[in-house]
Amino acid sequence: MFLEVEKPLLELEKKIQELKEVTQSGGVDLSSEIRLLERKAEELKHSIYSNLTAWDRVQIARHAQRPTTLDYLRELFTQFTELHGDRYFADDAAIVAGLARFEGRACLVVGHQKGKDTKENLARNFGMPAPEGFRKAQRLMLMAQRFGLPIITFVDTPGAYPGIEAEERGQYEAIATSIALMTELTVPIVTVVIGEGGSGGALGIAVGDRVIMLEHSVYSVISPEGCATILWRDAAKAEQAAASLGLTSEVLIGLGLVDEVIHEPIGGAHRDLPMTYRAIKLSLQKHLRDLVELQPDQLVDLRYKKYRAMGQVKREVKVS
Figure 1 (cartoon, rainbow, N blue to C red):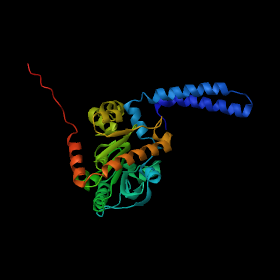
Figure 2: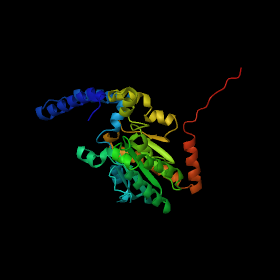
Figure 3: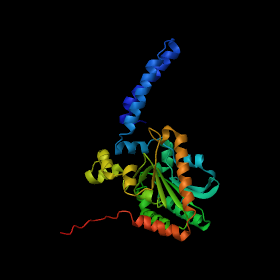
Figure 4: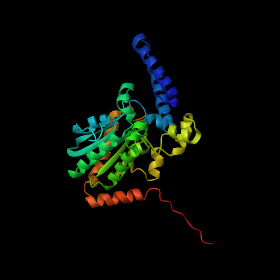
């Protein structure tokens, strides 16, 4: 998978590889030509990724090789024990949750889980939770509060599952209850937007004391395709919708909707996995260290003030 804007870079990288093969097999020294093309490729790479559109960001956020919740669990946590079921209907594979240790500290981890291929995506419902996914998360968050465990959530979903069966089982109620519950929990909550943060499907596990976001992730009230369908009755206008939604990390941190943007390797998180894991680890360490020092009533009060402040408009009144 590659972006349309990456085509010139891919062609240049292909040419470099061909020259290297000629050098190795034909006994012709093309090292100077290779170095020249490599410099051009590096310059082109910086030019492309410093001028990405909102729609380009959406494509990077959806990249099939982008790290998922289970990848972060494997690399950043130890002793992970997955817990299943909402005790009402079923287990939802679109949300992974369980107990783990982060830097030796026991915690609860909850996150959306997409697949890396079609088979996995079908099994995970493309990371779109049903009501039982949110109710599983609620059950385990209450357990975390009972034992005083901090909660870390990973957000990566195009949105909650919109199927009629999900609506029949109370999708809207499950999301609303999750949001309400998270506002009242007396333990620290850190949310990381690692890919797509779409609509209520994201918000259902994203009411954090700290909300951090990878640079090329997106976070919005609706997917670009959904927005385009509503506004223009044409999902093909998703690129236009993406430009209007203000879903990029730069816009969101400017509005105070996220607390930190974590820079990604050039080309996206999947291009340099060790760098990505290290950056998120350092960010989690910093925010958890600050939050665990707060008393439960302080956490709830500061969380309340944080979300009440969002969307406030200051109006200047001119007096003649």
